[in-house]
Amino acid sequence: MTNTHLPRTPRTRVVVGAVVAAVVAVVGIGVLVAPWPGVVREPTPVTAAPPAATSVATCGGPLLAAGRESAAAAAVTDAAAQSVVFGASNGAVPASTTLSPANVNGGAGPIVVRAEPVAGVRTDVAAAGSAQVAESDLRGHAASSCTRAAMESWLVGGSAATGAADLVVLANPGDVAARVTLTVYGAEGAVTPTAGADLRIAAGAQRVIPLAALALGEASPVIQVTAAEAPVRASLQASITRVLTPGGVDQVTATVAPAPELVIPGVEIAQAPGAADASEVPAFLRLLSPSAAATATVTVWGAAGGQVGDAQSVDLTAGVPLELDLTGAPVGNYTVRVSSTAPTTGAVWSTTGFGEGSDFAWFVAADELTAPALVAVAAGPSPSVTLASSAGTDQQVQLIADAGEGAAQEVTVPAGRAVTVSVEANGVYRIVPDGAGLRAAVAYTGPGQLAGYPVPASDVAAASIEVFPR
Image 1 (tube, rainbow, N blue to C red):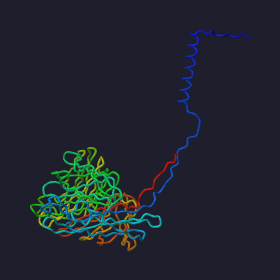
Image 2: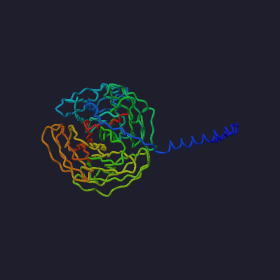
Image 3: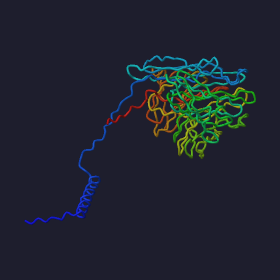
Image 4: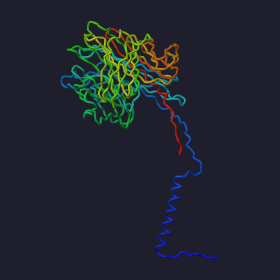
Protein backbone atom coordinates (compact mmCIF):
# COMPACT_ATOMS: atom_id res chain seq x y z
CA MET A 1 0.00 0.00 0.00
CA THR A 2 1.36 3.33 -0.90
CA ASN A 3 0.79 6.25 1.43
CA THR A 4 0.98 9.66 -0.13
CA HIS A 5 2.04 12.41 2.27
CA LEU A 6 1.51 16.08 1.54
CA PRO A 7 4.63 18.01 2.32
CA ARG A 8 4.06 20.11 5.51
CA THR A 9 5.12 23.52 4.41
CA PRO A 10 3.69 26.71 5.95
CA ARG A 11 1.77 27.39 2.72
CA THR A 12 0.23 23.92 2.86
CA ARG A 13 -0.89 24.44 6.44
CA VAL A 14 -2.64 27.70 5.51
CA VAL A 15 -4.53 26.05 2.63
CA VAL A 16 -5.59 23.11 4.75
CA GLY A 17 -6.74 25.44 7.53
CA ALA A 18 -8.81 27.50 5.08
CA VAL A 19 -10.51 24.40 3.69
CA VAL A 20 -11.36 23.14 7.18
CA ALA A 21 -12.73 26.53 8.20
CA ALA A 22 -14.92 26.66 5.10
CA VAL A 23 -16.31 23.21 5.80
CA VAL A 24 -17.08 24.16 9.40
CA ALA A 25 -18.81 27.35 8.25
CA VAL A 26 -20.96 25.47 5.72
CA VAL A 27 -21.90 22.88 8.31
CA GLY A 28 -22.69 25.62 10.80
CA ILE A 29 -24.97 27.38 8.34
CA GLY A 30 -26.67 24.08 7.64
CA VAL A 31 -27.25 23.62 11.36
CA LEU A 32 -28.84 27.04 11.59
CA VAL A 33 -30.96 26.79 8.42
CA ALA A 34 -31.95 23.15 8.14
CA PRO A 35 -34.85 22.04 10.31
CA TRP A 36 -33.89 19.64 13.07
CA PRO A 37 -36.22 17.01 14.32
CA GLY A 38 -37.66 17.64 17.74
CA VAL A 39 -40.78 18.37 19.79
CA VAL A 40 -42.12 21.94 20.12
CA ARG A 41 -44.30 22.42 23.17
CA GLU A 42 -46.56 25.47 23.21
CA PRO A 43 -47.27 26.86 26.69
CA THR A 44 -50.67 25.79 27.94
CA PRO A 45 -52.73 28.74 29.23
CA VAL A 46 -54.32 28.42 32.63
CA THR A 47 -57.46 30.48 33.28
CA ALA A 48 -57.35 32.08 36.72
CA ALA A 49 -60.09 34.17 38.25
CA PRO A 50 -58.82 37.07 40.36
CA PRO A 51 -59.75 36.79 44.05
CA ALA A 52 -63.01 38.46 44.99
CA ALA A 53 -62.40 42.04 46.06
CA THR A 54 -64.43 44.76 47.71
CA SER A 55 -66.68 46.62 45.26
CA VAL A 56 -66.35 50.39 45.64
CA ALA A 57 -68.53 53.18 44.22
CA THR A 58 -67.54 56.81 44.79
CA CYS A 59 -70.14 59.56 44.49
CA GLY A 60 -69.80 63.10 43.18
CA GLY A 61 -70.68 64.74 46.50
CA PRO A 62 -72.63 67.93 47.26
CA LEU A 63 -73.16 70.64 44.68
CA LEU A 64 -70.41 73.23 45.05
CA ALA A 65 -70.29 77.00 44.72
CA ALA A 66 -67.20 79.12 44.09
CA GLY A 67 -66.66 82.77 44.94
CA ARG A 68 -69.38 83.20 47.56
CA GLU A 69 -66.98 84.51 50.22
CA SER A 70 -66.02 88.12 49.57
CA ALA A 71 -62.79 87.76 51.55
CA ALA A 72 -61.77 84.71 49.49
CA ALA A 73 -63.08 84.91 45.94
CA ALA A 74 -61.54 81.56 44.99
CA ALA A 75 -62.99 79.68 47.95
CA VAL A 76 -65.28 76.71 47.26
CA THR A 77 -68.19 75.86 49.57
CA ASP A 78 -71.12 73.43 49.59
CA ALA A 79 -74.25 74.74 47.85
CA ALA A 80 -76.63 71.77 48.23
CA ALA A 81 -76.39 68.34 49.84
CA GLN A 82 -76.42 65.23 47.68
CA SER A 83 -79.05 62.58 48.40
CA VAL A 84 -77.63 59.09 47.69
CA VAL A 85 -79.40 55.77 47.10
CA PHE A 86 -77.46 52.51 46.94
CA GLY A 87 -77.86 48.73 46.94
CA ALA A 88 -75.96 45.50 46.39
CA SER A 89 -76.41 41.99 45.05
CA ASN A 90 -76.04 38.65 46.85
CA GLY A 91 -78.01 39.95 49.81
CA ALA A 92 -75.02 42.03 50.90
CA VAL A 93 -75.48 45.13 53.01
CA PRO A 94 -73.24 47.94 51.68
CA ALA A 95 -71.45 50.31 54.03
CA SER A 96 -70.82 53.99 53.37
CA THR A 97 -68.06 56.35 54.43
CA THR A 98 -67.28 59.96 53.59
CA LEU A 99 -64.16 61.38 51.95
CA SER A 100 -62.45 64.48 53.31
CA PRO A 101 -62.98 67.51 51.03
CA ALA A 102 -59.44 68.88 51.04
CA ASN A 103 -60.17 72.36 49.65
CA VAL A 104 -63.91 72.86 50.22
CA ASN A 105 -64.51 75.18 53.16
CA GLY A 106 -66.67 73.34 55.70
CA GLY A 107 -67.66 70.81 53.05
CA ALA A 108 -69.49 67.58 53.84
CA GLY A 109 -67.52 65.54 51.28
CA PRO A 110 -68.65 62.80 48.87
CA ILE A 111 -69.96 59.41 49.98
CA VAL A 112 -68.13 56.17 49.16
CA VAL A 113 -70.17 52.94 49.11
CA ARG A 114 -68.42 49.59 49.68
CA ALA A 115 -69.76 46.04 49.44
CA GLU A 116 -67.73 43.02 50.58
CA PRO A 117 -67.70 39.65 48.76
CA VAL A 118 -70.24 37.05 49.85
CA ALA A 119 -69.09 33.41 50.08
CA GLY A 120 -66.04 34.24 47.97
CA VAL A 121 -68.09 35.87 45.20
CA ARG A 122 -67.67 39.54 44.37
CA THR A 123 -70.71 41.64 45.17
CA ASP A 124 -72.19 44.00 42.61
CA VAL A 125 -72.89 47.46 44.06
CA ALA A 126 -74.75 50.43 42.60
CA ALA A 127 -75.18 53.95 43.93
CA ALA A 128 -76.36 57.28 42.56
CA GLY A 129 -76.91 60.73 43.96
CA SER A 130 -78.91 63.84 43.14
CA ALA A 131 -79.19 67.40 44.37
CA GLN A 132 -81.48 70.36 43.82
CA VAL A 133 -80.48 74.00 44.26
CA ALA A 134 -82.25 77.34 43.71
CA GLU A 135 -79.96 80.23 44.61
CA SER A 136 -79.08 83.55 43.01
CA ASP A 137 -75.81 82.13 41.63
CA LEU A 138 -76.73 78.48 41.10
CA ARG A 139 -79.91 76.62 40.23
CA GLY A 140 -81.07 73.37 38.70
CA HIS A 141 -81.23 69.63 39.25
CA ALA A 142 -78.13 67.43 39.07
CA ALA A 143 -77.89 63.64 39.18
CA SER A 144 -74.95 61.30 38.68
CA SER A 145 -73.98 57.68 39.22
CA CYS A 146 -71.39 56.74 41.81
CA THR A 147 -68.60 54.99 39.94
CA ARG A 148 -65.35 53.09 40.30
CA ALA A 149 -62.05 54.96 40.52
CA ALA A 150 -59.87 54.59 37.42
CA MET A 151 -56.31 55.20 36.26
CA GLU A 152 -57.60 57.09 33.21
CA SER A 153 -60.83 59.04 32.75
CA TRP A 154 -62.27 61.32 30.08
CA LEU A 155 -64.44 64.31 30.98
CA VAL A 156 -66.46 65.67 28.06
CA GLY A 157 -68.45 68.73 29.01
CA GLY A 158 -68.35 72.15 30.56
CA SER A 159 -66.77 75.41 29.55
CA ALA A 160 -64.25 77.94 30.78
CA ALA A 161 -65.81 80.81 28.85
CA THR A 162 -67.47 83.85 30.40
CA GLY A 163 -70.43 82.96 32.63
CA ALA A 164 -69.28 79.40 33.39
CA ALA A 165 -68.04 78.42 36.85
CA ASP A 166 -67.07 74.80 36.19
CA LEU A 167 -65.10 72.62 38.59
CA VAL A 168 -63.07 69.43 38.08
CA VAL A 169 -63.67 67.12 41.06
CA LEU A 170 -61.11 64.41 41.86
CA ALA A 171 -61.76 61.82 44.59
CA ASN A 172 -59.42 59.15 45.91
CA PRO A 173 -61.30 56.42 47.83
CA GLY A 174 -58.19 54.27 48.29
CA ASP A 175 -55.47 53.94 50.92
CA VAL A 176 -52.60 55.31 48.80
CA ALA A 177 -52.12 58.89 47.60
CA ALA A 178 -52.56 59.45 43.85
CA ARG A 179 -50.65 61.66 41.43
CA VAL A 180 -52.88 63.11 38.73
CA THR A 181 -52.20 64.89 35.44
CA LEU A 182 -54.95 66.82 33.64
CA THR A 183 -54.56 67.20 29.88
CA VAL A 184 -56.95 69.70 28.32
CA TYR A 185 -57.96 69.33 24.66
CA GLY A 186 -59.14 72.61 23.16
CA ALA A 187 -58.98 74.84 20.13
CA GLU A 188 -55.17 74.64 20.09
CA GLY A 189 -54.96 70.89 20.69
CA ALA A 190 -53.71 69.12 23.81
CA VAL A 191 -52.15 71.12 26.64
CA THR A 192 -51.08 70.13 30.15
CA PRO A 193 -51.37 73.37 32.14
CA THR A 194 -49.30 74.06 35.21
CA ALA A 195 -52.42 73.91 37.38
CA GLY A 196 -53.08 70.39 36.10
CA ALA A 197 -49.61 68.89 36.43
CA ASP A 198 -48.56 66.50 39.20
CA LEU A 199 -51.60 67.01 41.41
CA ARG A 200 -51.49 65.07 44.67
CA ILE A 201 -54.82 63.60 45.78
CA ALA A 202 -54.44 62.29 49.31
CA ALA A 203 -55.86 58.90 50.25
CA GLY A 204 -59.46 59.19 51.41
CA ALA A 205 -59.76 62.75 50.11
CA GLN A 206 -61.40 64.90 47.44
CA ARG A 207 -59.79 67.82 45.61
CA VAL A 208 -61.49 70.47 43.47
CA ILE A 209 -59.79 72.41 40.64
CA PRO A 210 -61.55 75.31 38.84
CA LEU A 211 -61.73 74.64 35.11
CA ALA A 212 -60.79 78.27 34.46
CA ALA A 213 -57.42 77.60 36.12
CA LEU A 214 -56.80 74.89 33.53
CA ALA A 215 -58.18 76.41 30.33
CA LEU A 216 -59.31 80.02 30.80
CA GLY A 217 -61.58 81.07 27.94
CA GLU A 218 -61.79 77.59 26.38
CA ALA A 219 -65.40 77.14 25.25
CA SER A 220 -65.39 73.41 24.38
CA PRO A 221 -62.87 71.52 26.48
CA VAL A 222 -62.33 67.79 26.86
CA ILE A 223 -60.19 66.71 29.81
CA GLN A 224 -58.08 63.57 30.04
CA VAL A 225 -57.43 62.58 33.65
CA THR A 226 -54.39 60.33 34.11
CA ALA A 227 -53.62 58.92 37.56
CA ALA A 228 -50.48 57.27 38.91
CA GLU A 229 -49.89 55.30 42.11
CA ALA A 230 -53.65 55.01 42.80
CA PRO A 231 -56.89 55.33 40.79
CA VAL A 232 -59.20 58.32 41.22
CA ARG A 233 -62.84 59.05 40.50
CA ALA A 234 -63.06 62.09 38.19
CA SER A 235 -66.14 64.19 37.51
CA LEU A 236 -67.06 67.68 36.38
CA GLN A 237 -69.52 70.12 37.91
CA ALA A 238 -70.81 72.43 35.19
CA SER A 239 -72.88 75.57 35.75
CA ILE A 240 -73.63 78.77 33.87
CA THR A 241 -74.89 82.27 34.59
CA ARG A 242 -76.39 84.40 31.83
CA VAL A 243 -76.55 88.12 32.64
CA LEU A 244 -76.76 87.45 36.40
CA THR A 245 -79.39 84.72 35.87
CA PRO A 246 -78.32 81.15 36.72
CA GLY A 247 -78.99 78.84 33.76
CA GLY A 248 -78.51 75.35 35.17
CA VAL A 249 -76.12 72.99 36.88
CA ASP A 250 -74.97 69.40 36.30
CA GLN A 251 -72.60 66.80 37.72
CA VAL A 252 -70.97 65.09 34.76
CA THR A 253 -69.50 61.61 35.17
CA ALA A 254 -66.60 60.39 33.06
CA THR A 255 -67.50 59.14 29.61
CA VAL A 256 -66.07 56.05 27.92
CA ALA A 257 -62.49 55.93 26.67
CA PRO A 258 -62.06 56.84 22.98
CA ALA A 259 -63.39 54.10 20.69
CA PRO A 260 -64.49 53.77 17.04
CA GLU A 261 -68.13 53.30 18.13
CA LEU A 262 -69.97 55.43 20.71
CA VAL A 263 -73.51 54.99 21.99
CA ILE A 264 -75.12 57.76 24.07
CA PRO A 265 -78.51 56.50 25.32
CA GLY A 266 -81.16 58.40 27.26
CA VAL A 267 -80.57 61.84 25.72
CA GLU A 268 -83.48 64.09 26.67
CA ILE A 269 -84.35 66.81 24.15
CA ALA A 270 -86.36 69.20 26.30
CA GLN A 271 -86.94 72.10 23.90
CA ALA A 272 -88.88 71.84 20.65
CA PRO A 273 -87.42 73.19 17.40
CA GLY A 274 -88.42 76.79 16.83
CA ALA A 275 -89.35 77.48 20.47
CA ALA A 276 -89.65 81.14 21.46
CA ASP A 277 -86.34 81.25 23.31
CA ALA A 278 -84.47 78.86 21.05
CA SER A 279 -82.34 81.44 19.24
CA GLU A 280 -79.39 79.48 20.62
CA VAL A 281 -78.74 75.79 19.97
CA PRO A 282 -80.81 73.71 22.46
CA ALA A 283 -78.79 70.49 21.95
CA PHE A 284 -75.39 69.67 20.53
CA LEU A 285 -72.85 66.85 20.43
CA ARG A 286 -69.24 67.46 21.46
CA LEU A 287 -66.74 65.05 19.89
CA LEU A 288 -62.99 64.53 20.17
CA SER A 289 -60.59 62.26 18.31
CA PRO A 290 -57.51 62.72 20.50
CA SER A 291 -54.81 61.00 18.48
CA ALA A 292 -55.68 61.11 14.77
CA ALA A 293 -57.76 62.94 12.21
CA ALA A 294 -61.05 61.14 11.65
CA THR A 295 -64.40 61.17 9.93
CA ALA A 296 -67.36 60.57 12.23
CA THR A 297 -70.90 59.61 11.21
CA VAL A 298 -73.63 60.62 13.66
CA THR A 299 -77.18 59.24 13.77
CA VAL A 300 -80.02 60.04 16.17
CA TRP A 301 -82.63 57.39 17.05
CA GLY A 302 -85.92 58.02 18.80
CA ALA A 303 -87.26 55.91 21.65
CA ALA A 304 -90.20 55.01 19.42
CA GLY A 305 -87.81 53.23 17.08
CA GLY A 306 -87.01 55.28 13.98
CA GLN A 307 -84.03 57.33 12.94
CA VAL A 308 -84.55 61.08 13.25
CA GLY A 309 -83.32 63.00 10.23
CA ASP A 310 -80.39 62.05 8.07
CA ALA A 311 -77.02 60.83 9.28
CA GLN A 312 -74.46 63.63 9.61
CA SER A 313 -70.82 63.19 8.65
CA VAL A 314 -68.15 65.44 10.18
CA ASP A 315 -64.36 65.64 9.90
CA LEU A 316 -62.42 65.75 13.16
CA THR A 317 -59.00 67.32 13.58
CA ALA A 318 -56.71 65.32 15.85
CA GLY A 319 -56.78 66.69 19.40
CA VAL A 320 -59.35 69.43 18.71
CA PRO A 321 -62.96 69.11 20.00
CA LEU A 322 -65.84 69.74 17.61
CA GLU A 323 -69.49 70.53 18.35
CA LEU A 324 -72.32 69.38 16.11
CA ASP A 325 -75.78 70.95 16.27
CA LEU A 326 -78.53 68.39 16.98
CA THR A 327 -81.41 70.83 16.54
CA GLY A 328 -84.42 69.40 14.71
CA ALA A 329 -85.58 66.58 16.96
CA PRO A 330 -88.94 67.03 18.75
CA VAL A 331 -89.09 66.90 22.53
CA GLY A 332 -88.38 63.33 23.64
CA ASN A 333 -85.83 60.69 24.56
CA TYR A 334 -83.14 59.73 22.04
CA THR A 335 -80.06 57.59 21.51
CA VAL A 336 -77.12 59.13 19.66
CA ARG A 337 -74.71 56.82 17.83
CA VAL A 338 -71.27 57.79 16.56
CA SER A 339 -69.17 55.71 14.16
CA SER A 340 -65.67 57.04 13.54
CA THR A 341 -62.59 56.09 11.54
CA ALA A 342 -60.42 56.66 14.65
CA PRO A 343 -61.05 56.29 18.39
CA THR A 344 -63.39 59.06 19.48
CA THR A 345 -65.12 60.14 22.68
CA GLY A 346 -68.04 62.50 23.21
CA ALA A 347 -71.18 63.66 25.01
CA VAL A 348 -74.44 65.50 24.27
CA TRP A 349 -75.50 68.78 25.92
CA SER A 350 -79.20 69.63 26.16
CA THR A 351 -81.15 72.39 27.89
CA THR A 352 -84.70 73.20 28.95
CA GLY A 353 -84.27 76.80 27.79
CA PHE A 354 -82.17 79.94 28.04
CA GLY A 355 -84.22 82.12 30.38
CA GLU A 356 -84.85 82.25 34.09
CA GLY A 357 -85.55 78.87 35.64
CA SER A 358 -83.70 76.90 32.96
CA ASP A 359 -81.57 73.82 33.50
CA PHE A 360 -79.23 71.73 31.35
CA ALA A 361 -77.56 68.31 31.36
CA TRP A 362 -74.62 66.51 29.79
CA PHE A 363 -75.42 62.99 28.55
CA VAL A 364 -72.26 60.89 28.17
CA ALA A 365 -71.53 57.67 26.28
CA ALA A 366 -72.25 54.38 28.06
CA ASP A 367 -70.25 51.19 28.54
CA GLU A 368 -71.53 47.95 27.01
CA LEU A 369 -73.23 45.70 29.57
CA THR A 370 -71.73 42.25 29.06
CA ALA A 371 -73.20 40.80 32.27
CA PRO A 372 -76.11 41.58 34.61
CA ALA A 373 -75.61 44.98 36.23
CA LEU A 374 -77.22 46.98 39.00
CA VAL A 375 -78.43 50.54 38.49
CA ALA A 376 -79.40 52.94 41.25
CA VAL A 377 -82.07 55.49 40.39
CA ALA A 378 -81.52 58.67 42.39
CA ALA A 379 -84.31 61.06 43.35
CA GLY A 380 -85.57 63.29 40.56
CA PRO A 381 -88.50 64.12 38.27
CA SER A 382 -89.97 61.40 36.02
CA PRO A 383 -87.00 59.02 36.02
CA SER A 384 -86.63 56.57 33.15
CA VAL A 385 -84.15 53.93 31.98
CA THR A 386 -83.25 53.75 28.29
CA LEU A 387 -82.05 50.38 26.96
CA ALA A 388 -80.17 50.72 23.66
CA SER A 389 -79.10 47.75 21.56
CA SER A 390 -76.47 47.59 18.83
CA ALA A 391 -77.05 43.86 18.31
CA GLY A 392 -78.24 42.42 15.02
CA THR A 393 -81.22 40.65 16.59
CA ASP A 394 -83.93 41.58 19.08
CA GLN A 395 -83.02 41.27 22.75
CA GLN A 396 -85.21 40.18 25.66
CA VAL A 397 -83.93 42.25 28.57
CA GLN A 398 -85.02 41.87 32.17
CA LEU A 399 -85.39 44.87 34.48
CA ILE A 400 -85.75 43.57 38.03
CA ALA A 401 -86.65 45.78 40.99
CA ASP A 402 -85.17 45.66 44.51
CA ALA A 403 -81.62 44.97 43.27
CA GLY A 404 -82.80 41.83 41.51
CA GLU A 405 -84.96 40.46 44.32
CA GLY A 406 -88.28 42.03 43.28
CA ALA A 407 -90.68 41.98 40.37
CA ALA A 408 -89.17 41.41 36.92
CA GLN A 409 -90.21 43.31 33.81
CA GLU A 410 -89.48 41.79 30.40
CA VAL A 411 -88.47 44.41 27.84
CA THR A 412 -88.05 43.64 24.14
CA VAL A 413 -85.35 45.83 22.62
CA PRO A 414 -85.46 45.63 18.82
CA ALA A 415 -82.22 45.12 16.93
CA GLY A 416 -80.29 48.36 16.64
CA ARG A 417 -82.97 50.34 18.48
CA ALA A 418 -83.71 51.66 21.97
CA VAL A 419 -86.59 51.38 24.44
CA THR A 420 -87.32 53.74 27.34
CA VAL A 421 -88.96 52.39 30.52
CA SER A 422 -90.32 54.41 33.46
CA VAL A 423 -88.78 53.49 36.83
CA GLU A 424 -89.20 54.52 40.45
CA ALA A 425 -86.96 57.12 42.05
CA ASN A 426 -84.82 55.97 45.00
CA GLY A 427 -84.87 52.40 43.69
CA VAL A 428 -82.17 49.93 42.69
CA TYR A 429 -82.76 47.70 39.65
CA ARG A 430 -80.94 44.78 38.08
CA ILE A 431 -80.55 44.79 34.30
CA VAL A 432 -80.09 41.35 32.75
CA PRO A 433 -78.92 41.66 29.10
CA ASP A 434 -79.69 39.12 26.41
CA GLY A 435 -76.37 38.84 24.63
CA ALA A 436 -73.91 41.53 23.59
CA GLY A 437 -74.45 45.09 22.46
CA LEU A 438 -76.67 46.48 25.25
CA ARG A 439 -76.13 49.88 26.86
CA ALA A 440 -78.32 51.75 29.33
CA ALA A 441 -78.79 55.15 30.95
CA VAL A 442 -81.02 56.92 33.46
CA ALA A 443 -82.65 60.25 32.60
CA TYR A 444 -84.79 62.84 34.42
CA THR A 445 -86.93 65.59 32.99
CA GLY A 446 -89.36 68.11 34.43
CA PRO A 447 -90.14 71.83 34.31
CA GLY A 448 -86.77 73.52 34.66
CA GLN A 449 -85.12 70.19 35.54
CA LEU A 450 -82.88 67.99 33.42
CA ALA A 451 -80.30 65.31 34.29
CA GLY A 452 -79.00 61.89 33.29
CA TYR A 453 -76.18 59.40 33.67
CA PRO A 454 -75.08 56.09 32.07
CA VAL A 455 -75.36 52.71 33.78
CA PRO A 456 -71.82 51.52 34.69
CA ALA A 457 -70.77 48.00 33.81
CA SER A 458 -70.92 45.46 36.61
CA ASP A 459 -68.03 44.98 39.04
CA VAL A 460 -68.77 41.26 38.94
CA ALA A 461 -68.09 41.20 35.18
CA ALA A 462 -64.33 41.45 35.73
CA ALA A 463 -62.69 39.18 33.18
CA SER A 464 -60.70 36.12 34.19
CA ILE A 465 -56.95 36.15 33.59
CA GLU A 466 -55.07 33.77 31.28
CA VAL A 467 -51.71 32.74 32.75
CA PHE A 468 -49.00 31.13 30.55
CA PRO A 469 -46.65 29.04 32.74
CA ARG A 470 -42.99 29.07 31.67
